[in-house]
Length: 318
Image 1 (tube, rainbow, N blue to C red):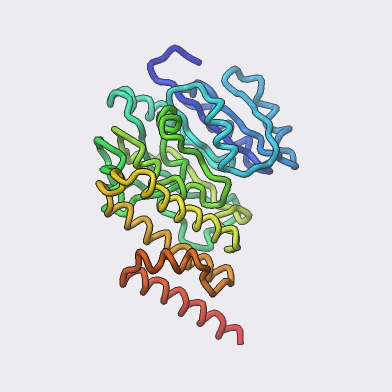
Image 2 (image 1 turned 120 degrees about the horizontal axis):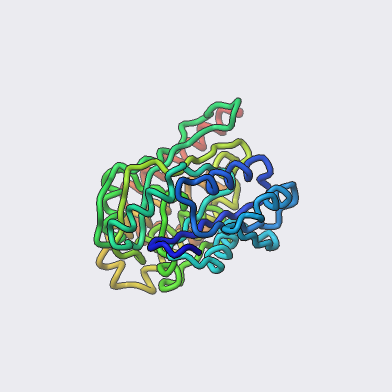
């Protein structure tokens, strides 16, 4: 690791991404200011991913860890636990890093006395020869400045409709994860699960407008695949995490109860929506119990809307 004031580890989980992994790694290695280490976690790939990764092992900052397939969240955790820099960045193996990523993050860190978190903007792009079949996610941060705590930044991002859960849109101090004990869960939507607990664990932080991350939208990704019960389980886990957060950190949640309640209701609507989209029209006991505890007119109307849309789809098939 270099002796510079700022140091960062880039963690790249990789599973069966033979068509994209080279571009992702090269976008990291060609940085104007290079990261201190690049940890590639081969998550039990069965295609040519591992062979392609081996082409970069000669680089002194690259470290490859091979594990049995366990999913994106645990693979990120493996990279985190094996990192040694002051800051850590989770970078997906089919995305592209802006050329000035490390340079910009380093300048923000050094100008702001090493904040716990820096959030920034991103952009979506399609694979060559294809087009968006839906409106791509908006990854632009509409807030810029320094904040005394994660909840204060979270509130401002919500206010400007620029709160995004994607882990590729923030850099954090490594010790935030170890002091809080936070880790990614072994579920789909692990970014949704970690979002509020992470912001609640963060102290001083910064938000910048700069686009430092390019998100690839591809046909066979989790984001573009059809909704299944795994999606329901992932959002349900996020909801359970929020309930645990209130139980384990009551004073923090009470201090920021509006943020917690807004997030809980949002995940409640999301779990009903995913369940209906997956073909499970009847909610389970957990969903009903949470609904009765945190119901509001807006939540109820949103859920009713989902059932009406499901009804229209069924009628269209008749």
